[in-house]
Structure formats: structure tokens, C-alpha cells
Image (cartoon, rainbow, N blue to C red; front, side, top):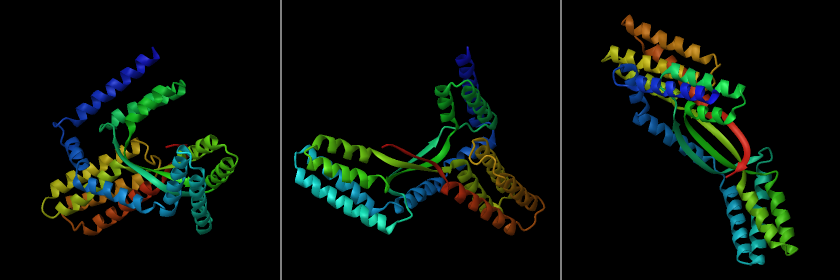
Length: 304
């Protein structure tokens, strides 16, 4: 009975999302257009480029030497494996000396765009309530499925070499090889390669869409004030979606941004110069966007 209730809620939410996305309502259509804007793709590329720049070349080289040691052991070349471990250990020693306050060094990354959340705020709230009920009933599998429908983000997942534990694995593997325990050493090295620290950085798509809509609103405000106001309405709706989806949902900045958008709308309605109001709004949303994108959403040691 309980599972049937959850399924009914999910189906209702999907139906609501489909209605909201229909072309009969201009705000929803505008939101879809904002999300497919080339500027959003540009932002995704910028996010990936920034993440690529954080990768540590020496740490990557240490991983490559570890992989070489595993291959050498598989080929029965103990001396080559020991030499590779020695090179990896040397690189890690340099990294530890160079980064004494750093516990993790990024060596690989994945960038993924996930946009499964409904457009309609009511559908989002219904899904959130369904997830809460599932958690209260300790029905965690159902809760996980529901929460997958509340994602709208660019997710950068970095895999990080742990400086505290990785050298220990190298040392122990070298000892095992010296004791002719090559199979155990191979398993230990492969485990060290598979068990890296995972950190997720999330860029909320609704906030990115709001930023794009605001930029476009300013660009069209002189020629077409009505279009500018429609785009500001899109920005408001996207910020509300971001809040409902839980992207720092209790942050008071959402209320401040809503007020800043209202200030620009009043300037446009009164045919006043909106330049300074737009500048304040863009600075505010840019700062909020940057803060959300730079926050670490998850950190754990997990298999790659």
C-alpha cells in the first residue's frame, strides 16, 4: 500500500512537470529556452576547464607509476615493479613536502550535466514530500529513486590521491614484493588505485539559468522592455526552483535576489534608467553563483 502511494505521487509529479513544459505557457517555454542557451554550454565548458586546471601532474604521475607496478607484477617482473614503486614513492614524498597542509590532490575528474528535476515548483515540492515520507518510513531505496528526480546541476567529481594513506600502501607493497608475496602486493596496489577520495562540486543549473536570463534581460532592456521583464520573470522562477531543489535552500540570499530583481522591474515599469540596478543585481547573482559552484557537496573515500 505504501509503495503504491509513492508511485501515485511520482506519477502525479511527472504529469505536472509535463503540463508545465507544454508550449501553452510562455514562462515555461522561456525557461526551457534559457536552459538550452549556448551560454549555459559555455558555462559547462568553463566549469570543466577550471576543474582540469586543478589536477596535479606529479600526483597523476605517481598514479601512472603505480599502474606500471601493477602491470609489472602481472608480467612477473618484480624488479620493474619495485622500480616503479620507488619512483611513485619519490614523487609522493615531493608532493608531501610541497603541500604539507594538503591531504588530497586531484588526479582525475568527471563532468556530468544532470537535469531530471521538474520545471513546476509544485511538482518539486510533491517529490520532496514523497522523499521525506520514504525516509520517515526507512524506505531508503524508494527515497533514493525519488531524489534522483530532484537534480538540476553540472556535477564535477574529482578523484583525489590521499597523501596520508597512499605512501603506506606503496611501502607495504614494496615489502611484500621483497618477501615474494607478489600477488598480495598486486592486490594492495590495485586497491590503492581504486580507493581514492571523491569530492563533488555542484553548479546548480537553475541559478546558472537565472544568471543567463538576467544578462539577456539587460541586453534587451533598451530595445524591448517587455521582453526584458519576461526574462526577469524567468530568472525569478529559476531562483525559486533552485531554492525548492535544495541548493542552499535556507540561504537568505534568495530573498535578497528576489528583491533585487523587483528593483530592476520597478525601474523598467517606471521607464527609469535601470543600468545601476542591473549592475547590482548581476554582481549579486554572480557572487551567489560562484559561492554555490565552489562549495564541496560531498567528500568520501570510494571506489573509482
